[in-house]
Length: 153
Image 1 (cartoon, helix red, strand yellow):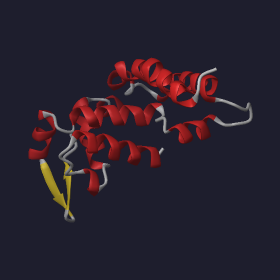
Image 2: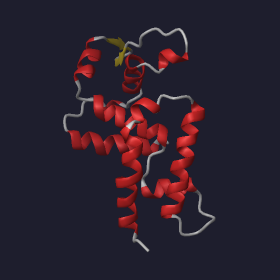
Image 3: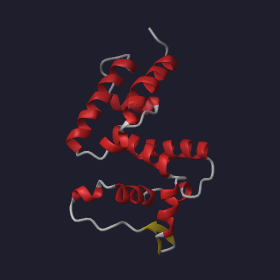
Image 4: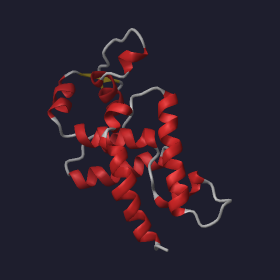
């Protein structure tokens, strides 16, 4: 009944806002829990955007430029911390590796250590390409970061 523009508005206002609400916390859950969230997202996207039953959800998500759960988590965390004081603090701890500036990652003893904020934020920044490192505008950051994450899903 709805046109594509209104379907996208319903998705953004209803599902994505719910997913973004706690994504930084439950986005670091184990893969079993993340797969449950991904299945819910897939079902809703399929119901909302599907015209033909044989169309795959991944194709719908690519066409509508919808980020999967893991990439949505990265997007939200990077947007939140890009200009934040935590990022400034982390940049003080930079090292020079072959002309590429990288953040020091704290040592961890088990996989729970990787779920800590002081580990996963520098790791996300280390994975950014060089053209996304020195952006000064928030709107430019949003568009370029989303484009980068959509290409690397």
